[in-house]
Length: 140
Image 1 (tube, rainbow, N blue to C red):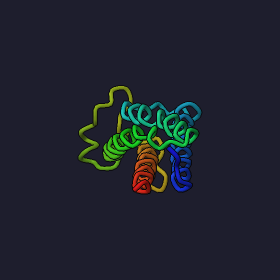
Image 2: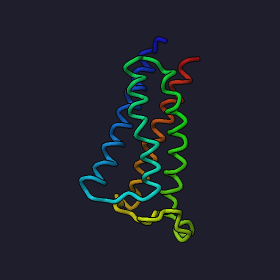
Image 3: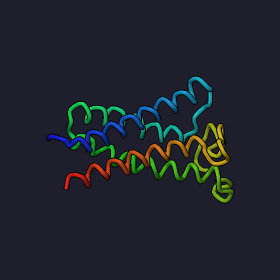
Image 4: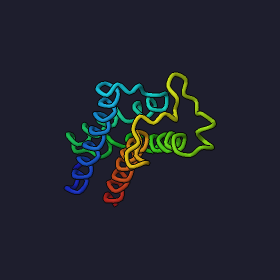
């Protein structure tokens, strides 16, 4: 299936976003030495395949290939929102989440008082999800 220039641009934006998110998570864990909690691992499991999914869709110029990305990014948004809530809202934070090795409410970074690693992941998932919705809307 042929894709329009707009769809191709959106696929490129999505692929770039997923690549940046993947490298960002690896930077924090492998270079900075921050150990990921269980929720971080779930978000990684949802983000990493998106690089391949959208990369293949971009190379093959086929939007249909990328449909699983919409589902993964939607689920990822929910996990990121929950994780961010554990970090920033005391009633949720007291519940502790379900992280076993590293506390879910641990904030390795806190830029400007609100930008944490789950916040960054959430923004990445939102960009992917909303851009994919724009791709779907441009088809009709």
